[in-house]
Length: 300
Image 1 (cartoon, one colour):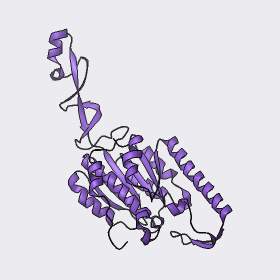
Image 2: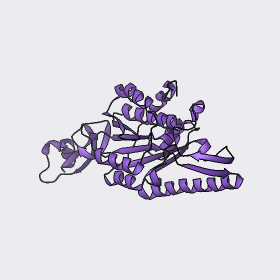
Image 3: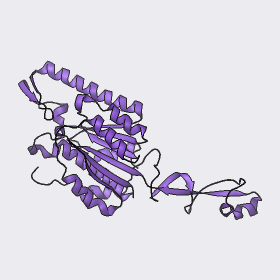
Image 4: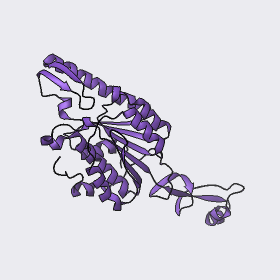
């Protein structure tokens, strides 16, 4: 696209500043963060009491409670951890759709806007953020970084991502799982992959302790094709060509198979404990974060 599109308008940014990403279990970080841990540590925030046991640190004894009840209680204090957030953007050639004159419905632009919103949430919450563009060859990487001051660098990184070549989702996810610290991992993709495979890569992330969410982005023309007649279709990633006649009956078969594929993805994710969000690239992308992810408990 000739002109760099705006990824994160100021009005949306102000709304996002009131929110934060949430994981079912906060992952232990390398440094103190803004998150309350399920563990008990040595911060100044009171959490609970428990009975004194031999060997406990007497400095944690609550002498006021002891004076009133004549029973020793230990104060439990909350520790703070950082949440590790990984945002993976599918930048394969199939994401470069539809044409430039329909930029507002462009799949990669839509994906980058969602990534920008999620990344901004992460940075304003003090999380440890990494962003990766999955494309032909090695992924482009940004981070890990933390803090709102990194927002402009993050937006610049996302803005320069272009859709290139073929991505094997299985291999890309497995490779990332092997190099990344476990955390909340958000994949934004059309899920078009070599032989349609993604499960091994997804399992690699889950087995290493990642909590995973998939944002499944398709264009309106992919959901409801407008073209009919005798067509020669060329796969933009493999260059394979297929001659088809697209009439009413064939469109009905196509939509049935499309819906079956999305249902299979949703059910597969549900079985694995993975969040699944189907999206059309002509939708208001902010609704994913401000509505859908909040309902799912991934954002609060």
